[in-house]
Amino acid sequence: VFSYDNKFWRSIVLLGCRPGALTKAYCAGKRSSYLDPLRMFLLLSVVVFFAPDTVGVEEFRMPEQWSAPAAVDADFADRLKVGLDRLQGMGELGDEAVNRFNLEIAKRYLTLYMAVGVLVLAMFLRLIRRRTFFVEHFIFALHYASFTYLSNLLLRLALPDLGGTGAEALIMLILQSGYFLW
Image (cartoon, rainbow, N blue to C red; front, side):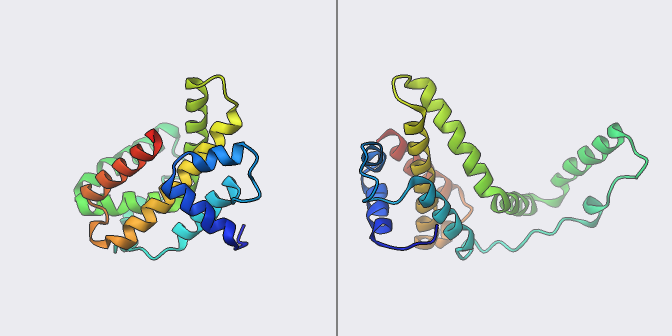
């Protein structure tokens, strides 16, 4: 996963400059010139995970009453009521605390969300284009997720003041939609 050579740079340049060309080249059998899609996805997820947090969000600490377990002899309905009460209590924390909580959850489970998203995107593309193999859609979905990681990382490093704002979300939406449609 961590081997480093010219394949990485060749793949990253093609991934960023010519969407779909990397997937076409890989599916056409030109695999020795480029990084494997799964390896690129895992490598970029590790890089994003260890990248400095340019958003400046400190770690969210849950209030004491949220971390207290439900009573041992409580049944499912009582435990569900305790959980719903805690969720309704999020409004009392304020928007800043809720945003910090959401960012902390996203940071912890980002790779899992992306992996599930890759499978869902591949299945969706397979439903749209039935004449191609699922593997081709899966490879494109891995390249798309790698592009998402890379563009997010570069955007955070280039424009750290946009972190967590609506402008960042809009730029990412335009980048990802453009990549997907191109």
